[in-house]
Image (cartoon, rainbow, N blue to C red; front, side, top):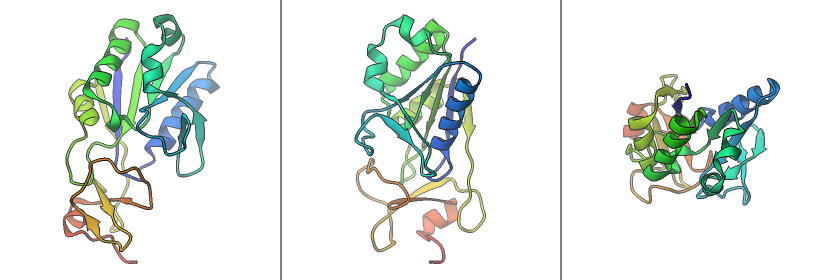
Length: 189
């Protein structure tokens, strides 16, 4: 029985690296896994999933997944979705269709909440619909578990207002414990 997984973590928790390792494990065992990501994430300028540690692999945009015929999707033993927080509720419902009607497991990786501490629509839908929810943990600079995503400006100030989606990585975001996120404390320089 296939399941829908949501594996979430803060910025810098190695979500994408984990997704790429899972894909590699399928391949190593002679099985096929399809890498997918929302078209909103165009940081590389082409459909590729890339981690900060240098791992990368070609993927398809979510829109391309939706246009694939059932037989093509069923040829995969798993669908892996990176940056799942950027999915819409309708797209998450489509993933439940792949799991429930086509019996293909789907593993989604993404942020649970944004820099303001609010749920992304895709994450909210996954939290409500996923069969299995798992946290990918990392730590704050102080050593406590990081649970919040902090966005900061070029002067190192933690931002609490602005657009929900601003693409970036270590240059704009860091995972912090709740205390340091509330304080706006990025730690010792």
